Image (cartoon, rainbow, N blue to C red; front, top):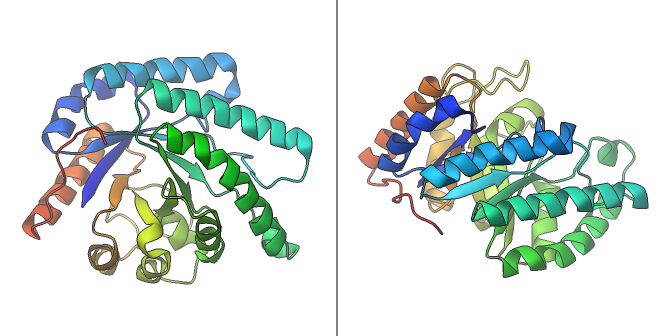
Length: 272
């Protein structure tokens, strides 16, 4: 099982980079979606922090791109221009950071179910990604689409199947699944199958998307881990915990120990 830890790239996080590398984990760099979108200056400031991480870390890097308002199937051509501009900026960042994977939200919104727009959303999303994924594939970057408020994996799975590109996969956010879906986490894993290549790990108690450390909320992780080992043992588990860096590192050490004891040590941190 491959492991990652999510970071924003602040200077106080840099001293942890050697241990992350020693543990054989990669790094998922984020906060473009909440901080970087506020202005061009904020975007560039975030990128400079991430470049400092890359300069000091030779392992695998993923990037979490912007997500607020990123509706790839939006019918308004003016919104489409904004979405494409943000994707261009994300593509540029991924290249400069030598990222092998980019995490984006699926573009789903609750209005799709409210107004019975599932078929239209799926058709437009497939058309969009059939064209868009080509440049990412040429650059050697995999795009994984993350669930947000989806009640089941059905639409994301049908989207990825419709595009049918090895460069477009799925990211399962277990905290979002716990918040919004009546289907349990192992069922999500089974439904996504080999399309699932990336997972966001954090905990909550269904009162909010808290991104707590593992074990603080009410998510039952043991059957989820078992499903992952059975169906997609090659997938990446990325800790997306909002806590002090030492608390995140504690969870990372626990994961390394857990999978090592099962004979599934994380792959060494390497580009690829």
